[in-house]
Image 1 (cartoon, rainbow, N blue to C red):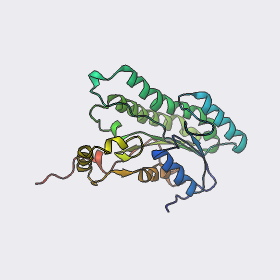
Image 2 (cartoon, helix red, strand yellow; image 1 turned 90 degrees about the vertical axis):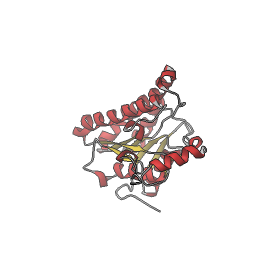
Image 3 (cartoon, one colour; image 1 turned 60 degrees about the horizontal axis):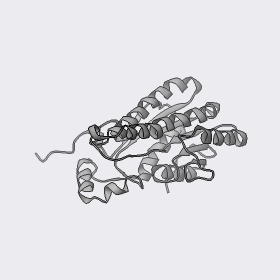
Length: 241
């Protein structure tokens, strides 16, 4: 099984670590020797990224027990209904922003002092939709675009403290959140044709990029948004000339 060097004994927090890409990140971090704290609604106690108090409580426990934090991965997120922008309720925009953006901000603010104590690293999970818009996904696209901009701001603000901030922009990846899409065979065929590598991604592949950016192997990398999308954002697949 794959492991990533430089993380043995590291303290890590993964929001949204109970399923999907977040759970894959937890598994890889643990195999690499990190002590992982899962911040998830399904946890015990539950952690809600939109409730700053639950994040602060976890941060206080980590501070008391470990003194600092080496890695923060913000993988908690939601995907609301597909609708044309003219028909999309304002509440969909608010909910996407509340979880995907404010939730990420809340975690960064709650755990920032612990990251600065260890010159740690934060990796935010954005989306290919932040780089190449998808139809009928304006609320999600706008929120994930904000995550990429936030990541660059974090990289600048935290550099003086030795903290790196990067984002990963996953393409179509099979997770519980996206499973309903791939039950539609026409959708899956169309998406697969559009991806240069010709396949839907696995959550473990996205996790590998996230954990790399969180590790000392990426010690000179900060402020980037790394597409992990099978080539989707590189351009259209070859035409049959």
